[in-house]
Length: 356
Ligand code: IPM
Ligand code: MN
Image 1 (cartoon, rainbow, N blue to C red):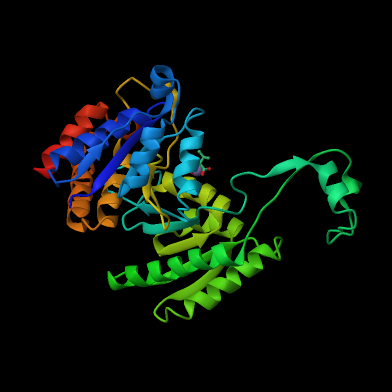
Image 2: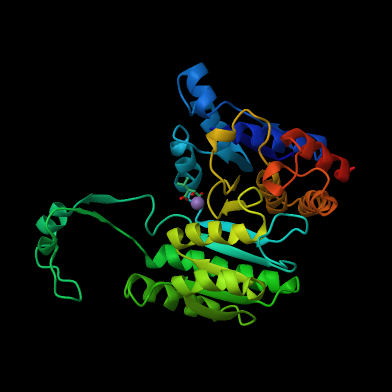
């Protein structure tokens, strides 16, 4: 039976990059059923809802979803794809394609992956008035001996780290590093925390990593604090293989790392582990560029390549990635963010030509 892929635009430039993905998938003639049901700003205008029930149903029944970008309108849609589907692993590759705009003198060989826990930590954002904590936890004292009432008026944010969700994510991380090692990578997994300050949540997180890695004897586990990691990403990017971390650290580090290898125009991601996996560029909806035909669809196309590999079409995924890499290497049809002058569609046609 043929697999079904739902391609969603979302907001801003989302629909433009989603259309590129759908076009490329169609032209690759892989026998996939590709659906583009309404969602986002356009659906809001035309149907009075940004997330029609029918779209939701198609996502639920699909094998994978591609998603363009969420602006203000599609925030809930993103929440459905992540939390509604329980996609607890966010895979964010950081790979240099020669020809892309790097600020480094020599970026050749940068090829690592950031694994970001997708469900908990500081997400989806749980906040409130400090007065609530004063009321609920009147006896709580921090390590300086201060209670919540000692701060006067203010807000708080909660960071939840559970054993169960950390374990499934870190198990995935260890197995991911082990699989990569089979393809010639070093099998080096770095767990990133701030356990010198977040002594309970992050110490537990790293301990679970230590336990899980015992089941993957070919993987070597290391640890850095997140501030140190931020520096090392800039200083020693070629030494990294797989980085695993909690939700918000992964969010921040993946944007930072993307800048070494061409910026957000190339940063792709996969959100997997739950009911239906979904794939999306790391960039946002960039409304400033919407409708101008100038957006770089590479991040979406690399996400599409990851999607193909994930649904058992690794050869097609590799062919798409190779075609993108070839366009960068040639350097004739790059978009403005990469120092070129090609439009979104000129770049897309160049990729299609390489695909043959
Ligand atoms: C990302 C984005 C999202 C996040 C926003 C849009 C909520 O920055 O996917 O990296 O913080 O996870
Ligand atoms: Mn982000």
